[in-house]
Image (cartoon, rainbow, N blue to C red; front, side, top):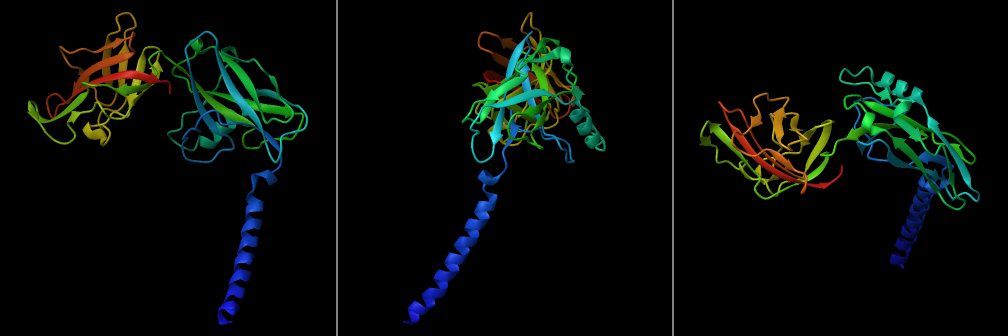
Length: 314
């Protein structure tokens, strides 16, 4: 009898908590949100400089070419797909770029975006249709990346200008596409057998420490376009895939497209050079770089042999 009396309050409390949780879930349920049309994320949002903004920047990059087609998705969010076709009109909103630049202008390191000139792109589907019972449609843009400047920070402020059903999202009705052109060597590269790095405490005196040795099994490297024949290396690490190799900021590969020979350089360490007598080249047949370089030659030398093969685009 005593046990039964104790159970009754417990059951009431459980039912009350369950009801509260259910009500809270219903309030958070996206199916209860109003229907809006918005852009789906075309990439991971940019890690912009500190400070909020009404607009989100998405980095996108495409190969150099006379006419490169890219696709972006507009979607209906809300409780249910529409019972009828939805017409969505697409345009650009240059004021969004001006607003972002104004919001970020208080940050000393911020480099303003430049609205992508209309001569460098065409929205080939200025009107798209989300079919009845569905949620998505594809917007296509043609870019003339062969005419892009590699040093200009472009933004295409693509925008949903109107729709035949539902409202336009206040957060993702306009998005800023940070569009860049990629040269033919840009991408993700896997480390290959024969890659090694060596530290010295003085010229000719190996450190024989844990940071020296085989790096063939280290993480992939990212090669990012700097200009038409230069890529920058990121994610180079010491042996054992430990910490990143510091002191050689902006490590770059300059490729001669005629000979496929390369020159290594670091903007942060001017004494970084090709190691004399060793290969520095690119093999277009296998998409493989063989890189031999060294730095700090007269104090605490470092030497690296990095053999990397193209894996996929970034």
